[in-house]
Length: 412
Ligand SMILES: Cc1cc2nc3c(=O)[nH]c(=O)nc-3n(C[C@H](O)[C@H](O)[C@H](O)COP(=O)(O)OP(=O)(O)OC[C@H]3O[C@@H](n4cnc5c(N)ncnc54)[C@H](O)[C@@H]3O)c2cc1C
Image 1 (tube, rainbow, N blue to C red):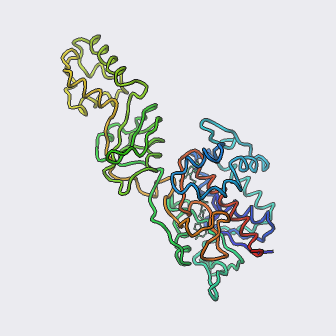
Image 2 (spheres, rainbow, N blue to C red):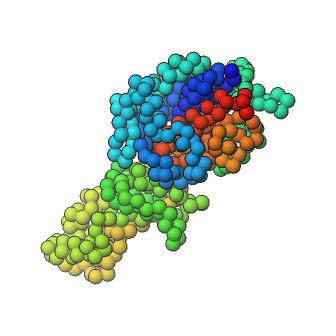
Image 3 (cartoon, helix red, strand yellow):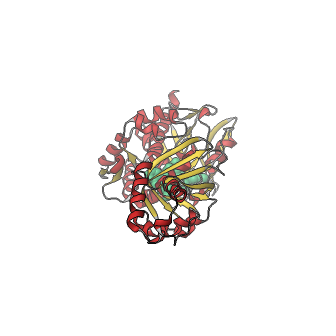
């Protein structure tokens, strides 16, 4: 029976431990926090969007970074497998809008509870408050891990599942990157994704808290469209956030500063239909001021600043708006421009882009191509996905495959 040490008791590490133990290994799970799955507790605003009930191709279309690397992991342990595993462990799940899957209780803690009790059933040795400081190497061979308290944990194989750099209060402080680099692995540059976008323009600040539903956000770099989607966005004190801004952050150019954003405030109307609507509204309004008509087209706070953004006097009577001014209003309604200053810092990001280079990991086993008894799982690998349950499923799938492969290690 092989001794396996899993470092990191997040989503990926818990699943790696489950699969290694199921395959007959003697497993020790080392977690530096006082409890397992601290980040899982805050996922999906405490509800845990744990996977997405879609097929593999749909899944991979939601992975902008290195999707092909995930083929084997998703074949090995698919979203449906995760749903079944939870159902079998007293955590019923429900599929909601956009095929997003949640625990039926809508409590993220129930997912961790189910996994914790499974770890117990499988006799995994869970060590909490067990922070790994370094990996140990003897005679050129990886032999285990040394903890902060000086204890050395020996292992036939080590699985690194230390997470990324986002929300460091949950324990994801980037230790795993250091361990991988110490062993000669390449770690690609890290940046925040699924994060709000700071804008050069300061006017979004005055709309802080305003959420726009059914708008189209487009991100472009010069003439090329990098992302365009219909959905919901939010104005904040720094610029924009909400689902559309978060997703757009996955497609930012490098460097991100200066990338252009436009918001189509009326995506349901063609330019011609909108023109007809504005003409009709203005004609009915007659001598009424522009500022009294715009709230019929836009949310009140946006309507208030909109004439200023179009450089038109808000008190202008509607019947005196010139054709050029009407044209300007139309252009701004269909493509309100913003400029990206920067993504928000990585500690506010939902996930970290970059990580251990996929070129140095065998995708069929999650095994290091440099160190034969080292395995990787979860966010510390250079893959990331959109929102919708995809990032957690990446952690479950890579964790499961790493665990099963590591348990097989002696037979390699
Ligand atoms: C606010 C927020 C909401 C999210 N919501 C969703 C969602 O609804 N759906 C979704 O799919 N994804 C969501 N995500 C992303 C998802 O949570 C992560 O992709 C996923 O948790 C990554 O799992 P992981 O196991 O790789 O890393 P982590 O969950 O970060 O786990 C790594 C673990 O390793 C431990 N560790 C680190 N270093 C050491 C060390 N030296 N010694 C011992 N232990 C160590 C850490 O303490 C931590 O417990 C969300 C993320 C955030 C921040």
